[in-house]
Length: 143
Image (tube, rainbow, N blue to C red; front, side, top):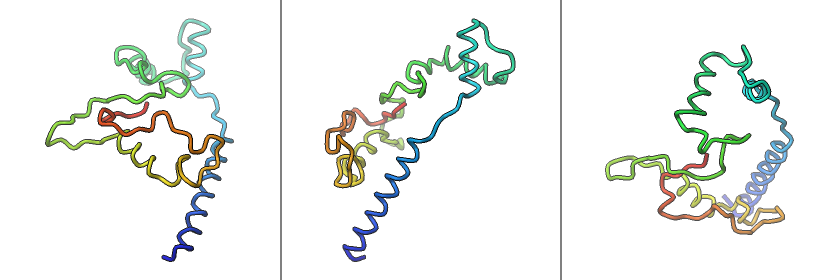
């Protein structure tokens, strides 16, 4: 492929990516059954009847209780916004998903990140706080 054709294709991809991002910012999430369940529980001190299935109520009790999921999965996005080691074995002979490590490396090298030449954000080119490549990141995933 000729260089000018490659550059034209890249400009199209950049434009499509920016259009999708602009569209996603217009999406509005409506209230869910879980939102109504939690609101009623907070308001009345007891779970509302019929809002969630019995198995969903059991799952929510496990999620918020014994399983300890809320240590990392909390707030409206069910995320603390951090990276966590999920306990994937790093010993010889095991297949390892490097998680954050590979993603950070790819993002730092991508011409389409805000560090790349196609960025037009106000903070384009500014360092990204969590984008580093370090050995201790192996096996970490963002909640």
